[in-house]
Structure formats: C-alpha cells, structure tokens
Amino acid sequence: MITLTYEFKLIPSQQQIAIIEDILAVIRKVWNYALRERKDWINGRKCAVDSCSLHQEYIIPSDAPYPNYNIQAANLTKAKKTNPELKRTNAQVLQQVLKNLERAFNNMKQQGYGFPRFKNKYRMRSFVFPQFKNNPISNEYIKLPQIGLVQMRLSRPIPEGFKLKQVRVVRRASGYFVMLSLQSPVSIPDTPASGHPLGIDIGLDKFLATSEGELIERPKFLTKLQSELTLLQRRLKLKSKGSKNRHKLNQKIARLHQKISDTRKDFHFKLAHHLCDQAGMIFVEDLDFRTWAKGMLGKHTLDAGFGQFFNILAWVCRKRGVYFGKVDYRYTSQICPNCGTHTGKKDLSERIHKCPECQYEINRDVAAAKVICHRGVTAAFADAWFNKLTV
Picture (cartoon, rainbow, N blue to C red):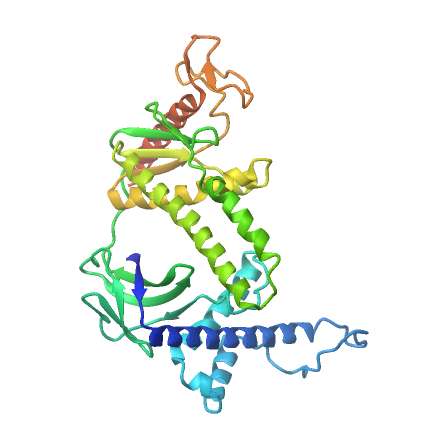
C-alpha cells in the first residue's frame, strides 16, 4: 500500500472563504467544549474521597463514565438537533475533530506528549473531509461538501492508479491550501543496496560534505530575515490586544515565517534530488537532533533544519530507487579514512584532517563523510548476505 499527499493552493471566492472560516470557528468550539469536558472529568477525581479542595471542587457524579470518543460522538449527534451552528457544518468534519482529540490523549498517555491545548481562532487552521464516494476533482476544480466547487492551482498532475481517500483544507498565512491523501494498493519492495555509494556528513560550518569531496554552504534562512522579523515583533508589542492593527501585523509576521519555512524546504528538496543524481546508495549518521538543539548553537541548528532534511532525503531516495541508510555516528571525525587509524578528538577550530600515521591530509568534514560511506557499505552488504542466508 502506497500513500501520497499532494498539496495544491486553493483560489476560493469571498463566499467560499466565509464558509471555510465558519467551519473553522465551529470545529474550534467543538474541540474546546470536548476538551473542557474531559478536563473537568479528570479534575473532578483529583481530590481525596473524604476531603474537598479549598479552592474549587468539580461536582461530577462518581458513576459518570469517562467522556471518550464514543460518548462525545453520541452527545454531538444529540446536540446537532438543537444547535443551528452544528447543523450547518458537515457531520464527518465534526466527528474528525473528536477523533483528533482522542488521538491527542492517547499520544499523551502512550508517547509522553503534552496535554492537549485549547484553541483560539488563530490556532485552529485545518479540517478534514475523511471520505468521498466519487472523485471530486475535475480539471482544476475540486468539489468539497458544504463549500462547493473550488478552483485550485493544479501545479502537477495527479498520478494514475491512485484513489483519493481524504481531503484536508488548511489555512496558512499565504492563503488556503488543500492536501489530497492518495492511496494505491500496489506494494513496492525495499530498495536493494547497489550502485555508487555516497556518504554525507552534516555540520554548521558547511551544511554538508560528501565522500566525493563536495562541500555545500549552509544557507542562513532565518538569519537573513531576522532583522526584519525583530522589527515587526518589536512593533507588535506596542499594539493593543484584539485590535485590527495587531491582527494585520500578526499576519505580516506569519507570512515572513512561512517564507523562511518554504525557502528552507525548497532548498532541502533540491539538494536531496542533487544528491540522488550522484549515487545509488546514500548513507548518513544516525543522530538525535534534539540534543543539538539544546546546545549553544541550537538556534543555528534549528535554522538549518537537519531533521527535516534527513526525512526529505529518505523520501526522495525511496521515490527514486536509491538505497538510504543510517550508520553509527560515533568517532566518525576521529578515524582516518585512508588507513583506519584513530587520530583522537579534534577541536571545532581544526578544519583539516591530517593523519599522524599515513600523513593523509583532507578536509575534516570530507574525511568524516568517507568514514560514514565505508561504514554504510559494510553494514549494507552484511545485511544483504544475512538476508540471503536466512532465505
């Protein structure tokens, strides 16, 4: 089973924009009400049985069941009979909001995520139509329930053999977008390890270095626009909360943030395709970027977006049939790629690798990339031989 997500920009009319904003307002109220109901139930069971809180007490019957998705969905159906706002909103969209809330609580318990937050009118930015009987796309238009026929910029053709499963409408600083979830029953096997290998070492001096000696400069996406962003945020501090001027300035700041994000993502995609043009196998270090973000250079690490780049690189490799693998990150900068000698720890100021044994001299990042490439090739072919033996 293959699942793809294609994103296109919508060109809605003013009437359609009003409908989209109304849907966002209604689902925000549903989310906040359902979250408040769950939170009250949890708070009502925090006090001891024989004593009450000195500040406040939630009077909820002891036999009242926990308001999970099934109970809240049933209550939502009853509320639609008396609430005109809920009547004019698509039922499946409202149910999807409750499913998202249920998923948020499950992630909080199982994966240690934070407690779900209440949404204001700026934080609720998308809603989902979970299923369609017929294909709603015709030429450059998409027919959405309640909204109608909306024009979109079909920037690339939708692949044949895929079925549309769900549609998500997203509001961003630069307009409204639609995300199409496409599925195909075809199964694609994992890409075998073959072809020319390429090791990649990432860093802050250079964005990355390859085992072939190529050095890519690090674009400073945030730093270039930081002075403009700082000025706008300083002005925002002087605006009254809830005023139209504050709202306009917030939109301007959001557009600037989106420009930074889009520029970074575009650079990552183009670089990933550039690397796939050169190799049949690509190897990177298995790093935890959360620890990088907590250090002294955390701001520059987050600006580079190494985690997003690795995710994009893995996806592009799979799409283009290039083998992608991760190797152990330890001591890659302390081993000579020519003779394998352990040269010891280097300071960050040392940008040249020079082996005391074989006198091999090369750029430090390129040397680390060569070590990564060697480790990746060794591990990939060891796994291939193991799979042959087990079969």
